[in-house]
Image 1: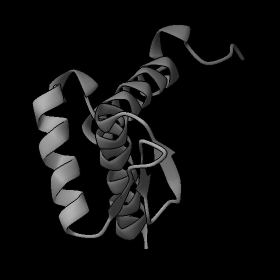
Image 2: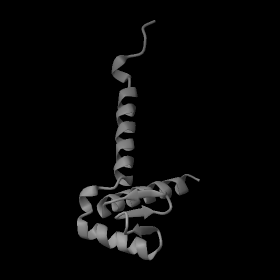
Image 3: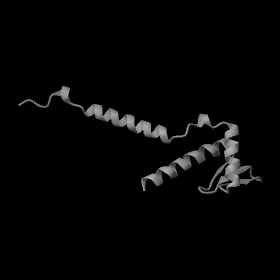
Image 4: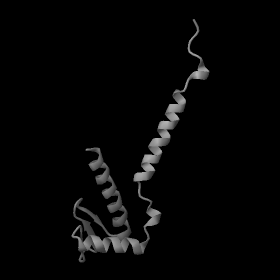
Length: 96
């Protein structure tokens, strides 16, 4: 008796579909850093300072992201990090 018909094999279609879905999921949860310009970053950091999420350390010219303990010398780096950190926390909360 011959084996399965290779023309009826849909496993590659399923694998391709699954890869596309994973890519879409990553795209939906990732932060596009091109959307964060200096003015946007500065506004976010000011809001985070007001909310006591970020502590400026003027003598070292750094900003400390309190929840993670990570130190930054750039408002843009901090803004991108915070967006990613928040997205990760939100994804973890959805998984529970």
